[in-house]
Image (cartoon, rainbow, N blue to C red; front, side, top):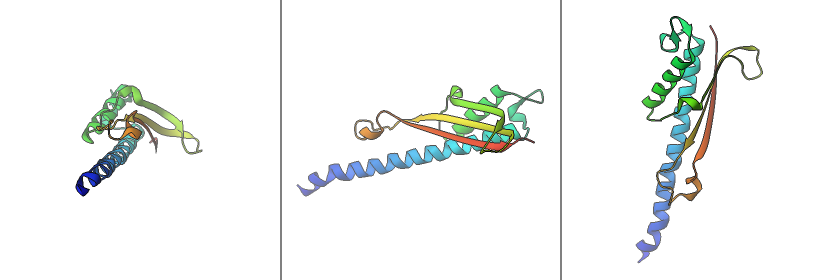
Length: 129
């Protein structure tokens, strides 16, 4: 009888903790992808160039592939790239990447606070070389 009373609270705490950790992990993964992508844009790398010149489609493909390595699926349309941005109040000359992503819980019926999805937004800058 007591177990039946405690079980729903225990399951809510257990799955709530798991989903919060997934949310935190996804945010960390997106931030890592943004940093790697900004660096790929700022420091000329083959993955982000076409014929030796910066290429936005190649950069988006790089970001999508890097996110897949974290088991996160991002839509290339959710990426905002700026190859000559002013970051953190400094003069222009930075590569800036902004990623927006909607985190969706796998248990929307149980965790109603996350049911509609949580919007995540990360940004990274890297100096151009």
